[in-house]
Length: 178
Ligand code: SF4
Image (cartoon, rainbow, N blue to C red; front, side, top):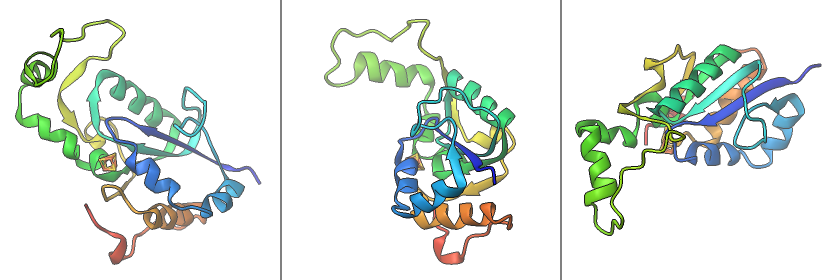
């Protein structure tokens, strides 16, 4: 039987959701018997090909995030917002209460310890968006896994259901937002 294809990515995330996913520990071996990874920080694949499931960590804070998120949406049959950042912007969205310019000046000109003040402007760098956005403001999302991060059991419960062709649902004790 063909393996189910899973892609994962961290946009404006901290990789904590990926670490929590890896906390499924030895269950990863069982997972790899039925699933294979496409683009992911865990592989060397640069672009997301056609996949069954896309797991998105992090909100959207810059132009590259938008591009990558759209690539995932185009290629993944089921797209999942993983963690607080993807669901509502998370802690990084605290910058939304300030103007972007204020944030840049604080980080690169006025902050304590800044040397050689200069806002980076190399064209290779992705432009920051004015605000941090949850991913559902950019693309359609099929499922949301809450938590910062969601626990390993959340990942396992969700993926097991999906792989078995069941509609995923989380028991009450696994639903948390912190
Ligand atoms: S939800 Fe929490 S753990 Fe996940 S990327 Fe955001 S800050 Fe990190």
